[in-house]
Figure (spheres, rainbow, N blue to C red):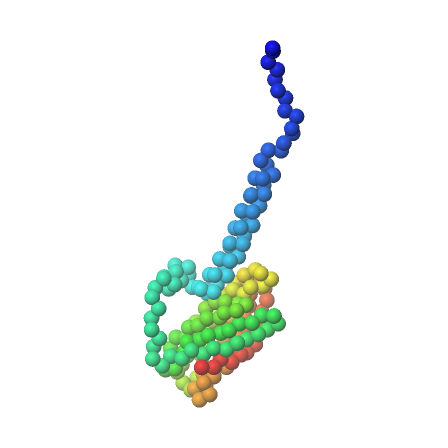
Length: 172
């Protein structure tokens, strides 16, 4: 018997479509990972450089100084809501805090220590808009009313080409 070459009648496409699908999934994963990374960085670091932020995250928390109060307050606009928390040294000094909710990030600022004295600072973080983390920032300022234990502030925020001005009140 003579050896005949066997001809294949299947005309398969090979691994091309599967490779393309895997490539698309990897690209989508990278995009989603970057989006989540922006959100995590905004919430935990604000506008702090990444090296300094990592150092702060992994260092031990120091005990609160005596005379420091924690003021909190909610804010809502359209379908977005946040809770702002500030640590305020009643004798004056550096103010730190966080924003959590639809937007997340860090607050920094200063307080002059006087009753009805000026408090001001900056917010840096990100806001989730239609599932996408958009870098956002705001400047804020107000007064600390030690008698009523309230901190009314006004702010001017922006992110993703939008800006918003309003006011809110925190209490401690």
